[in-house]
Length: 125
Image (cartoon, one colour):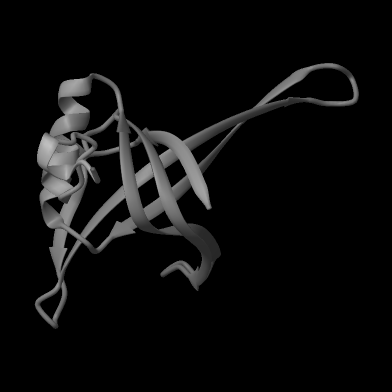
């Protein structure tokens, strides 16, 4: 599944008890539709995201950045300290694409180890 949205805060790198690093960030996805009365309804869905492949990408994931994420969504539910039932959406991210200036995109590709640039040595003939 793909989602496109803006980061609501700067990404944070956390280290698990097994010494694995995970990048945590939150993304807001906007949607709009018209109800039966013809009024436009704006709706925002928030995803708590986790990215396990490279902690280096965290420095590029800053508040307000537009991102396209590939991964899978899951729902979590819990009881707050106040005894109130809560629910949220998690997004287990497998691929991150930054939208914006090409310099920033090139930096992200270099950080994550992907590249769209081919040299003559890469040509199949």
